[in-house]
Structure formats: structure tokens, C-alpha cells
Length: 305
Ligand code: ADP
Figure 1 (spheres, helix red, strand yellow):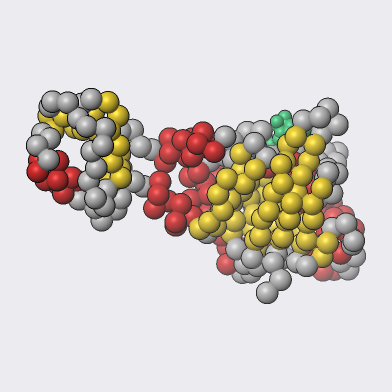
Figure 2: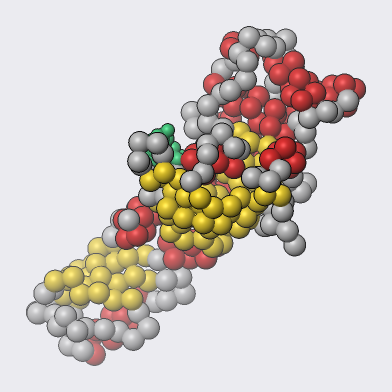
């Protein structure tokens, strides 16, 4: 099957010499809900800028549904809906006109354009604002207008750059529902985010990007399994050998009297105690290391920085 998005060896060095992308490979399959996750400055917007041909790449190849953007960007564009971070509609235009005009750019007949406009105004809760000039909308409404505009030509692939930046929790939920719904009806979605929770709530697969490099690329389920390891610090009596191990467990001697153990789902801490007891190591006290997903995520990024 042709990938919805295939990126190979993508590099970007900005004019000032800054290397924003150091050779990115990424494949997103049709129908996927994919997160490109990374901290600020990782290179997410640069990647999206290149896909939408707003940023010139330094090297590499980008194909959208098999269409190389260097060879036929107009065709690639028909498959693509992009929601950049910055609002880039004409703020003096009316909401409704922004949508119908966009449909017009894609050659959609007027009657169909009006039908689609109606549909997206309704789905994104903008019907009441149809006659309002875009500059009068709240930030959340502007974001929804951007999404509606990106979808008006029924693209196969929707890419959203930080769609929930500055969006309140209530609105975030309804946006999530909407995105899940259009994904379920067949639209491939890629979103960038710096919140692991957001990727977790919505996506099936994700790539983590840091300093312009893909750090990891796999299913969220797999990643979460690793992230859900619980870390305990055991304070032990006497002096510990740095060679101490317990087969089957991820154990690390931190200093003379502290052992760190990472417990996966299904593993039992009592087995560690028993094994330590056999080795004449007695545990005096135990602390649960702060092991929030975010913390692990930060660690992952630090490890690979
Ligand atoms: P993200 O979207 O992950 O926050 P960006 O792609 O916006 O990251 O930025 C990646 C890096 O490239 C950042 O360090 C940023 O400062 C730098 N950068 C972005 N645009 C430019 C530019 N026009 N000139 C020079 N450096 C830039």
C-alpha cells in the first residue's frame, strides 16, 4: 500500500547556518492517527513547513500518497490538508466566505462548496459565526476555522501543527472527538504536539523528534509499556556490591546503600525483596520514584540528546 506520507533523508539548514533537521525518515500509513512528538525547537514545524512547501528543504524527499512534492506539488496538495500554527486566513473575510473561497481554489463547484461549508460550520460549531469577520473570532474559533478550511477539499491526509495550543480544555475535548471521527471515517491524521498526553489520547503511532532527529518511532502502546515502568528506590542496610543483580529485573545500584529497580507491568516487587534477602541484603525503606509519563519522556529525550 502506498504510504500516506513518506519522508526520506530530510535535512534542513536555515540561512543562518542553523541545522534544524539532520536527516529524517518517516513513514505514515493510510488511515493512521500519528503523532510527531517533541519539545519546542525540535523541528516539527520545519518538517510541516517543508511538506507544505513553505520551507525549502536542504536535502531529502517527501512523498504524499506516492506523489513527490518536488515533481508535482499541485497534485500532492490535493491530498493534503494542513493546519499550521499561525492563523493565515484573511482576517477581514467572513468565516463562511473563507471556506467557500477555499473550496473554489480547489475547483469544487459552487453548490458542493456551499454544502461542504455548511457541513463544516456545523461540525466545528461555527454556524453562528458564519457572517462574522475572521478577526472577530476567539482564538479557539480561529483554530477551528483553520481546521475546517484545511478539510474543505476532502484531503486524504490532514496535518495539524500543535492544534490545541491555546485551546481551553472543554474545546480541546470536542476537537479530539472531531478528529477521532474524521480519522474513523478514513482521513489519515498527523499532528505535532509537545504533550505526551495528547499523543496518548488520540494517536496509534508516534515518532519522537528531538534536535532535528527522530529518536524513536513506534506504536504508542509499545512506548507506553516502557513508560509505565514503575521505579522504586530501595534503601538497604550494610554496604551494597556494585555487582548486585536480580535476574529478570531491571536493577541498578546507585550508591553503597541504594538500589533502583524498575518494575514492569506483571512483575512483582516481592520477588526482588526475596532475591535480595537471599543475598543477605535487607531493605530498610523504599521510595517510589516520581515516574510520571512526562518525566520519562524528558529522560528519553535527554538520553538521546
Ligand atoms: P518545533 O516546531 O519543533 O518547535 P521548529 O521547526 O519551529 O521546531 O524549529 C526548529 C529549530 O529551527 C529551532 O531551533 C528554531 O529556532 C529554528 N528555526 C526555525 N525557523 C528558523 C529560521 N527561519 N531561521 C533560523 N532558524 C530557524
